[in-house]
Amino acid sequence: MDTAAVYSQFAGSQALNGGSPTYQDWARGVAVDPELCALLDTLPEPKRQPNLLFAAARLAGAPAGGWAEVRPWLHAGWPDVEQVMRTHTTQTNEPRRCATLLPALAAIEGPIALIEVGASAGLCLCPDRYSYLYTSPDGGRTRLDPADGPADVVLPCDIEGPVPTRMPDVVWRAGIDLNPLDVRDPADLAWLEALVWPEHADRTVTLRAAARVVAQDPPRLVTGNLLDGLPDLVASAPAEATVVVQNSAALYYLTPAELVRFEAMMAGLQRTRGAVWLSNEGWTVLPDVAARLPAGLSPQFILARDGAPVALTDPHGRSVQMLQAV
Image (tube, rainbow, N blue to C red; front, side, top):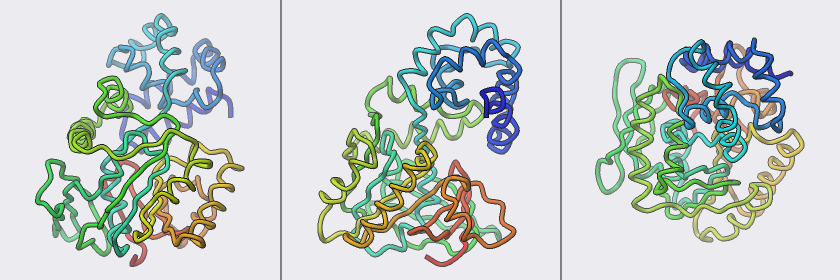
């Protein structure tokens, strides 16, 4: 798919379904701008994606208006935007995804050694430090709080199906990322905020609050490739804990060959260490997982345990539809 088609598809799918008229407008504009597409084509293919371009533009000071206003600014400021795109990666760290992961995490008997691949700043490595407010279709509400009391971060989530009744017992946590971010670094936090879509002000508020919680006791974050570094992290986890490896919107960036290697590695870790694999990815990322869904469903993200789908989730953690008991 050429660059113009990528942006056209983004406008009609992710931006539309994700509730960002701004990015829908910008993406449509890029798609019919041959000069800008040519500039994007000078970048490596993984660096041409819409999320990276738009976040880089906003970090570099793009106006907040429509494409008619942004286009001349972007052409004039391309060197600055290009520099950000070449030195940064899409590392959206959405703490609200913890609310969609929690039903599966809470079903695992503790103690848990939690490991995240593609951890970014580690905001999803601290699910036991946030409070949750689940709303069922009948309007019933269930609140869960950490063991030491209500948290400053409350993650709301609509839920269909069984509601979790307890918090996971996380006793050890670590993450791996090609470029881990530090929420205590203003530049890293500014990049995380730039990755939040313009209309999603509530996500920015939650991000900042979660960053303050994590900054008090940051998890261990290792720099490395998940295909090479994960076995060492698993080996360093406490022997008495159940290892849980989680990923959320991270495997999208792997090539098909790398995905095969990762799935094989996880199968091996399940056999040798009893590891549990929780995957929360777009429905096209893991075809074998999507193939196991009941007919007639139209998922955005699929939450799977050891390759078996257990829930459909909103990409930004706003809702979860349980498919089976976990």
